[in-house]
Image (spheres, helix red, strand yellow):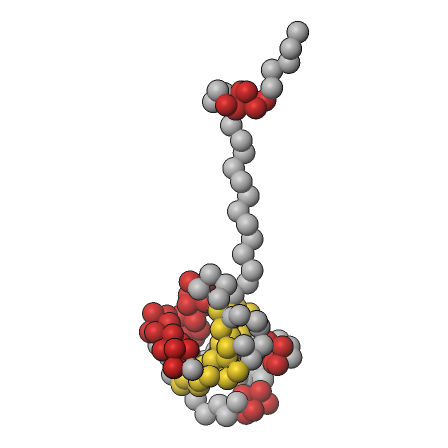
Length: 135
């Protein structure tokens, strides 16, 4: 007597496979906790945004959400490092922070642009793409 193959049952539609587990995506943003800035800004092949914010500033916190949305929409081509300027004043001073939010754009370890003020995720995308095209 021949055993029936589970593949045959699958082929005839009597057996179903369990749903595939979704692949876990690599993170596209992180809260800064004292990591080496040079390593963070030199992520190969990715746009890196250093975003300085203050938790007490509503416009800065809204902008942080826009940056997260932007990074998530880039399919791994962008990475945002969110830096609380009050928690890391030495880093903020090093980057010349005078107002929040401040975004510093890096590509392949090279600083391309500083952007002061909050904007929407689509506008952020436009500015970044324009900056990269010019470079």
